Image 1: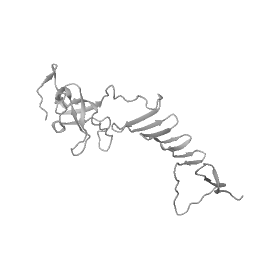
Image 2: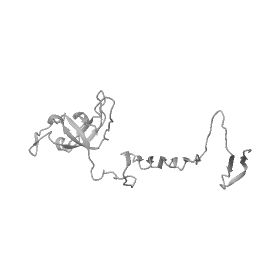
Image 3: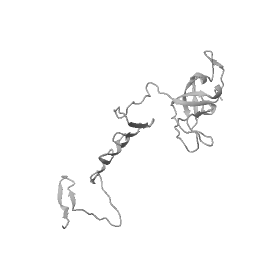
Image 4: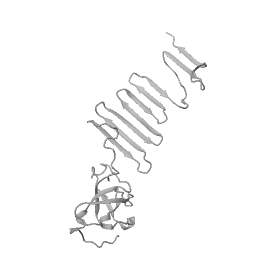
Length: 228
């Protein structure tokens, strides 16, 4: 363990109150894995980051759970800032109580630009790639939207009062509205496979688009009307 030459900091015994630290290792090697982390406290350990093996595991005080098969676990990223308390005041028994942001790390308060009641927004941003995952649930109209943002753009799935719509960053789109209309718009090929592919409707139309002009081509275009 890291040697400690201080018993008090500014007259306050170590291990009392809350200390701010930085996660340097978030892999719990214990059995079972409880989501523990190794936390570096510059106020105690000094300005130089110690090696992971020199530090005790900090327990993860979860916001919900405590019983078998209940709750969820949130494990902070390496480099995250955490606030810790200490069991019975022992600095070798840290407990992560919560997280805090520096001035540069604070995320947007409202990622969608909206401030409405009855709207739940969950967002996760990859600290290495910048990719973002955003889930928005709107209880005013019982809709939800999932958006995945990468360097290529946004992919999203939306379910709402008008129907269901999915779209990729490249502009490929599938939508189903409440009137029963289905729209498929692909930048590439649309492939259908199966033992049988029946097409049923009052009017069945296939249209051949000229790859050079983008206009319908008479060869390959078929319009079939059902018998009445």
